[in-house]
Length: 136
Image (cartoon, rainbow, N blue to C red; front, side, top):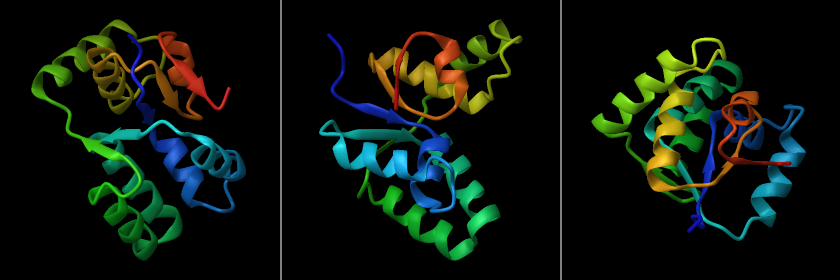
């Protein structure tokens, strides 16, 4: 049975926060339209806060990071050792795709929890080929 949860990747979070991002409007529309709960991981949290800090400053990164940490906009899941191992196997097996290790942790978590939908602008979620990717 498919999960009601929607996994959110770094690029989607960044587009949601950065008003100058080419995907900002699409990200806002999708978050407002979704009726399914959002979920993300501590690895995506790390990437997102770091990316926001580098491009939009510490204050914006802190504010958004606090919302994620307090689970105001999404449920924050921690990658387990087992998921890390599975992610490593995905990373090694798909050496030709350019998947980041964080992408692979996301894939491993989604597979384990049977999450079928990702909110991502990252081509890698489509390349992996196991999920519905929003926006479509």
